[in-house]
Image 1 (cartoon, rainbow, N blue to C red):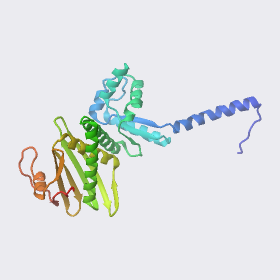
Image 2 (cartoon, rainbow, N blue to C red; image 1 turned 90 degrees about the vertical axis):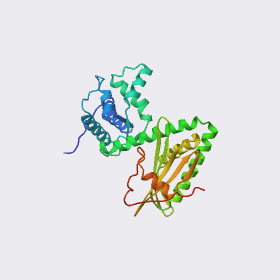
Image 3 (cartoon, one colour; image 1 turned 60 degrees about the vertical axis):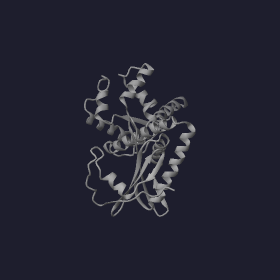
Image 4 (cartoon, helix red, strand yellow; image 1 turned 45 degrees about the vertical axis):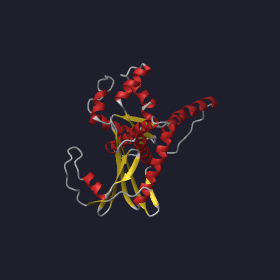
Length: 294
């Protein structure tokens, strides 16, 4: 049936037209407004929030399913959504500092907008939450490592920190270039009195094309720089995928990075770090000397 229009006065027509446009405009604005969803990733954080009566969940698995459904609903509406972590301890400090009642949805929303959204986050890409969370947790760990290493580096003095970071960046470029074509996984570890800083970098190289994560490279360089600047002991391990896999290593000590010999790499990998007892070598792995760093 064809659509028919009934003639109305100009005043009524204007009112009806405006009334019809407002909801459409609001929906458009809602679709163009980004959203941030802060999620309690593990059971411990979830348990900490259950002390608030306004937090209406009793089971972590059910909670995660509900968050997953919310994310899918936002995506179906065309809303750009970031996923971040909700930290109950940080939330409590935030409410105390602003004299907010932590047992209200409004306070949780404000915390997410003010604090959580500025932390580590990922863009929701349609993956199930169970698959997204490990990447989000890794992102948060990387950011925390970088912040700690950067603060440690800053305490060594501005000039010393800049020099150490430039040196670490050059060393990383040398290591990546020396690794050559293939798939490589670098790990830098710097044990400290109160913690151990660990950074990982995955690279692939096909002839002249190099692929690596810039954020991971920044964290790696900062951790290495912190070790160089403070004179801490530590090291770098490189594992190259192949047939067989190969493992190389470098020792960090007194502000210098020294290549390990093949026998030193073998000894490091084939010794239990807790007991000092020998352990069998890993099948299908060759232990080789670290590349020179000149």
